[in-house]
Amino acid sequence: MSNMFCYQCEQAARNEGCTSIGVCGKQPDTSAMQDLVVHAVKGVSQYAHRARQLGARDPEVDQAMIEGLFTTVTNVNFDTDRVEQVARRLGSAKKRARELYEEAAARAGQTPEQLSGPAQWEPAADSEGLKRQAEEIGIEKRISANGEDVTGLQELIIYGLKGSAAYADHARILGYDNEENLAFFHETLSYLADNPQDAEQLTSTALRCGELNLKVMAQLSQAHTDTYDHPQPTPVRITPVKGKAILVSGHDLRDLELLLQQTEGTGINIYTHSEMLPAHGYPKLNKYPHLAGNYGGAWQDQRREFDAFPGAILMTTNCIQEPKESYRDRIFTTGLVAWPGVQHIGEDKDFTPLIEKALAQPGFSEDGEEKKILTGFGHDAVLGVADKVIDGVKNGAIRHFFLIGGCDGAKSGRNYYTEFAEKVPEDCVILTLACGKYRFNKMDFGDIGGIPRLLDVGQCNDAYSAIQIASALAGAFECEVNDLPLSMVLSWYEQKAVAILLTLLHLGIRNIKLGPSLPAFVTPAVLNVLVENFNIAPISTVEEDMKQILG
Ligand code: SF4
Ligand code: SF3
Image: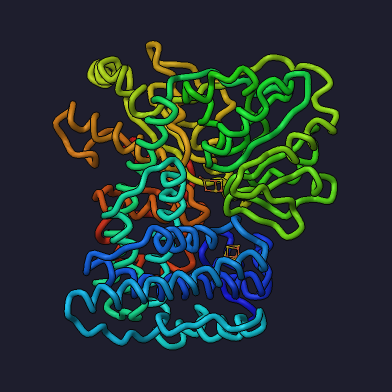
């Protein structure tokens, strides 16, 4: 057995799995503790699912499950001690869920089931004990017992749930919860706890996770638009403004809002980084005059860019990389993100240490030359000009739509997406979302009859908006989404992308092109099923793919 085994993201070593240290920087101890967290979450859900069926639930149990899953998403938490705390909290949540179940069963006059598997797990007294427990339940153990196909399918489901848990957590932070969605999380985790073997059933459950993710993304979209209004097309400055500065990365709009409030009148300018860019499109965030602009590119460039940033930095979610010494004392984490030794802003969201750090830094000494890009093309904004778009298609001004979206990453093969965007013919429109857009979002694509050729729909979770746009177009043309002049050329990196992919498959979307490489946990047998049913294909060359799409 290797020191660790993880193959949940696109960076998996040799496209097989990381076995001595994560390519992302995850250490074996952290990896083991994360395996244990996933195991513990399953145990919690075995009880919580049964309790729910008898009408009993506890928000703290639900929260522990959601946060447990989110903690193990790629590039979120690298701090073994913190992950251990999460595991221990899940131990308590399991105890609570068990009581809930047993009390509810007693009320209903039933004898509670004696549950086996993860439900039996009790946290060991010390870290070493936890590590030994983790060794017993690692992925490699399951591969030897269940084979690669079944394990891969089980993991596909877990990764989809992890992605959805991240979105559910963002919604929950804004006060949006959904009983039906939580019930599905518990039910599916409880199903996995039974170590299911039927490949067909596992595949259909994975697609049901896609359906769950659609609902969760819809809820998050509503949370965002209810709280911050519908995004509007908004020019965003991408060059610095003279003065003190804080850079905010990740996906959590609430953290950004709180920071904007706490920095009002301090003279500090706030810049968005990576997945925070779409925040500028929301009227109730953009109203703050000190939300000055967007800085840098996607997550994998952060070590160079944070180094050069003359202020303090806040990571609200993934993707964090190992901080360089040069900025280790001016980067902060909050929420579920953590890196050992990096200062963490707790649940009180008192950003004072971050603000003080920013004030002690030099800030930008002068204004950069003014340059702007556009964001804020959520479904409300795009559907607001639907008539124009539909006319454009009918009169031949718009030939085709390309959704070029997804995660960015470090692999050189990702140049494909830059090149693809460059080669999209001038009578075609590009929709984009998530952090993959940084490969091309500073290029000038011009417009077609006043409609910009590049429409930034938002964060990865705004795949919901893209789906709304596609459905509305299909409605207008009285056809299926698959029959629209629309092609999806997607890039994946972490588990939110897995969840979104499952959503698209659940919706029956065919002909997706996926890169830069296919997931290591999708075995050839499983891939065959996906190809047969959905004609999903790995990206090849830009020329070939473009020719195939446009005929
Ligand atoms: Fe490797 Fe990705 Fe797992 Fe990190 S998250 S250890 S890079 S497979
Ligand atoms: Fe990017 Fe990490 Fe996935 Fe929300 S920030 S998309 S990779």
